Every structure is written in C-alpha cells, then in structure tokens.
Length: 449
Image (cartoon, rainbow, N blue to C red; front, side):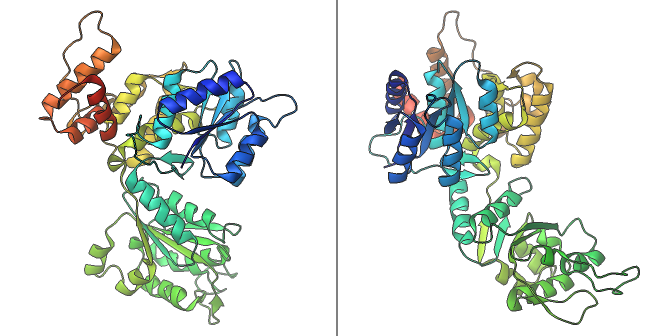
C-alpha cells in the first residue's frame, strides 16, 4: 500500500505530521534522519516524502537526502520542511527538484493541500485504493488521462520503437519526447530537436541528413545533419505533418533500413538514432489529402501517445501554476492568493500548459510583493469565475455579516447545484474541484443534491 514518509529529527513534529496525514486518509511512516528515510524507501517506495531541511549536526541534511531521493527515486515527490527564516535555502532546494516546501510552524491546511495536489482528492473514501503519483516534467499529475499517457511513454521508452506524440499546441509534446529519451537506454546520448515547420522545404533535407561538399551553390565543405548530431541518442522531429513528402520518403528509408545519404552524396551512412515525432495536426486528415505518407505513419505510430489538453485535466491546473510560481520567482519567493487560484482554476486555457506558464511569468513580474493577486493576471484570466466554459458566472448571493467560511462554502455549493440542475459533475467542474471532493463536501455539509 502506498504511504507518506515523514523525515524529521523532532519526535513531537513527526507525531503531529503523522496525525495530520492519517486524518487526511493516508498511511504514514516516520524516520528520524535522512539515512533512515532512505532505508525505509529501499524496502518500500513511498508515494510522497515530507523532508526536514536540518536534522542534526551529524546526520545527513535534508538537502543531501533530497539529492539522494532524486537520484534513486526520481518519481517520488519530496516536500521540504524549513524553519522560519530559512526560505532562501528552500528556494534553492526547489530548483533541485523538490515538489513544494512548508515553513514551520506548519499550517495543517497546507499539509492537506499538498496531499490533495500530489496524491489525489481529499479524504479518500474507505476501501478505495490510491495509486502512487505520476511525475511528468517535474510535476506530479493526478489526471487519469495524463497518467495513462505518461505510463505509455514510460513503456515506449524501454524499447527502440519510434514514438508519435500528438496533441494541441502547448500540451507538452517536447517534454514528452525528452521524457522518452531520459527513461531510455539512450539517456547518455544526445537529444536533438528539429522543427520541421520552421525550416524551408528546400533546406529541410540537408538540415536533417547533411550535405556533401559541392551539393549546392556555396557548399564548399561537407555539412553534418541532425541525424549525425543525434547518433547514439534520440531525434525529435517536431511538427512532422509539415514535412515535404519527398523528405518523408527518405525518412521512411532511415526507419526501415537504418541508413541514409548526404544530400549530393553517394555512400550510405548508418543511422543509430531513436526517432520521436510530434504533431498538433490530425495525421489522418493529412493522409487523406495526400500531404502525409500512410506507410510512414504506420512506421511512426508503433507507440502513438495523445497528450490531453489542459481543459481535460483541470485537477492539474493549480499544481502546475504553483510549480511555475516557484520556478519563475527566483530569489523572491511568491505565492498565489486564494482568489488568484480561483480565477486560474476557472479559466479554460485554450493555449494549454504554455499559456498557463506565460500567464504565471507575467504575474510574477508584475507582483512586487510576495503575493500574486488577480490584478496581476491577464484581464481574460482574471475575469474568469467558476461557471460554464470558464466565463464569468452569475455572482452568488452576498453572505450575511458574521457568516463563517464553512457556511459560505456550503452556500456556494448549494447555489452552484441549483444552477446546474443538481448535476454533480458540472457543479464540481464549475467549483474548480474534483467530483470526489464535491461528494465529500455534500456529505460533510448534509446537502441533498
């Protein structure tokens, strides 16, 4: 059974955090040092680690333990726990691969938020097993569609077969190709990229295969191509649907016979290269129009992996946003205000993860203080409210003076259910939470949908 590992040299803190983890519905194990934490992980890999930065003068430091975990268990998210005034060290550690950090004295709501973002919905139902988180691009994803895509990419990486990654612009196709390379036996070799849409058709063949001296006007010396540069490694052919059919025929030969010729050359060269291709266009439409060779498609799609758009993995929006805030804040740590997170969760993100990252980069630049507020977001994102299509919805009724947070939440849930005709799936999406989290709150507040 997956468990949460807590490493801290203070017994009272370990017990308190163990209780918080158990209350959230997760199994917990505790270690008093980094060395002991690694011993526990060696016997059974944890789903998540809370690691104190400083654990005694003679013990392994939290940073050293983090590096050891990243080396031995790269898929396991690690959350650092730091004392007040040690935030700069935590920021440095974040750049080394930590998922998040907590500052002592910790807020148990923050613990629950991290558990929910990294491992799934809050308070799991009794008897329901929970899968370990899948990490992609350094971020734990809770999306079933993204989890399936990452698992297929990992399986593909163990082979030498070509991989075709499809998905809308901004969904992370280049990250997927790098993931395949890093998980493969070719990880020590080069990872080379060529954008087939950015290179003129007349130059693409020479760019890919190289050219012999005298092959064209001005070619006084032989020129190496991307296949030669990628020898022993992986070659990403980005936007392959834009490739000229003549070049497609030569690429098909490389895949089938493992050899190619320089432009203007006569002697075949061996190609020891793993090919990953990507496209944001429907390949079947390009085949029907004659713009893409069907035989090449069948050679490339041994593993075809479709990356879901961000609107279909809404549970990942806030973990991604928080990750980008940490990545882009530099030496001035920032955090997202609750109303900012609400706007981010409500937006539909037509530009996918790329749009989200650009939005956060803009906000971090504009936020002079330590908090990112809605006014730091682009107007179309800041105006988003929970509602259909991410558009501003009818404002809920104003709470009465003295109303506490739980009453306000209950009121918002009831009004959202009324607006969606009792449809729990639509209500959960409108509220920016998972359906399981909504079911829990319905039970907690005694609401009959």
